[in-house]
Length: 304
Image 1 (cartoon, rainbow, N blue to C red):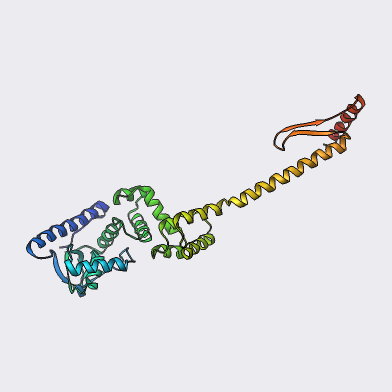
Image 2 (image 1 turned 135 degrees about the horizontal axis):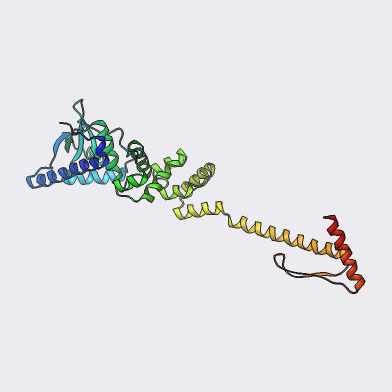
């Protein structure tokens, strides 16, 4: 009989069902070890197929090889969880790595816990089960988070509480989806880490692509990527060059001002200090000289 989960029960119910399936698998596995069996129901591998909507799209082949070697020696200890399909086959809800490794190991059957969920429940449980894993690809995690938030109208705080992650971790993961598809694919395939990708988010798109390609080609660390981004936003050599140019221009303008004052007042003009702060001295040598300076100032004032 199919298990029914009303929408009003939300994600909490889905967590409960997932945990129940794993607890069942563990208890069955424990009894199986004591009785000489693996636990769960032995199903033919050719009757089982992966969930096409599974968030995880990339599987580390080296890790699968190691798991397959372990399975050859010890068998499948933890049953997978499958959903009975209408055509008599079984779709994987949890445990696709074990399924792939079992096939790689040459097994023909695998222990499984058979459930009967609706298509919507299968999708939701698969998303949650994967998000709880630490080794989920960051792009796959971001896509799964986005899907859960949109379908359940969740805030980032709600999602963080449901899957046991911090809200900043949710935010940082979701931001990866704003990057160009080429960079998203580099992260998905492990050529760039999420740390590399996050460093690029504030840059123009053409620069993002340029830096991403450079980082992959030259094998940059996250710290090297962050420094490259920082230098682009505030290039130290350009900043210093601008400061030197401004200082030189100010110095020339200030000297020109002093020279103009000397010419107009027909007397010695000197200053103490710098362009930013100081004093300007206008020398006079008689009363007539002072009156002449006043007359020049009057003319300047009338012309303003």
